[in-house]
Length: 150
Image (cartoon, rainbow, N blue to C red; front, side, top):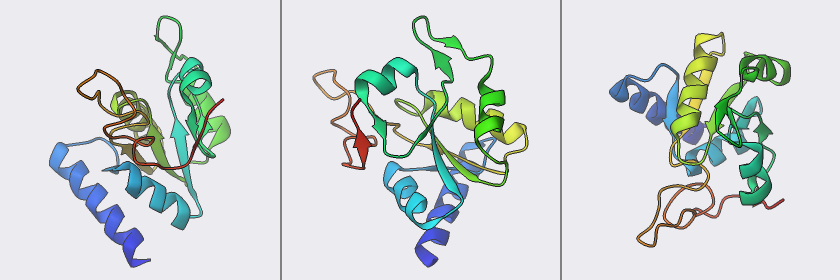
């Protein structure tokens, strides 16, 4: 349990240093470790349905769109869908393509009664490499963490 506590502490320090409105920020590896060791934790993939379908998703992720495709319009039912699928007592790790949408989703969840919300830095695909492509430099996929292709 010491590794779990160490990871959570690092995530909370990042939140304090960056002035985040939620519990903390995790690397993909840290989130994966916590998912394996915290029984009440869930990974929430907030990318669009198109991204889940064509890019893939982390294994066992709860999928709730933050923005919908095409047009990337905000999902007006996000909070309602979150409340329907997840309890406020669960530890939630929010993930998107690179960490931006998941940051916003974590902040909204934290502001609405979810006490343990974390953003997964780098996201599923991570930053673009020198060739302009994602999924190779960093992020969930590039780190070789479990995921499925549709």
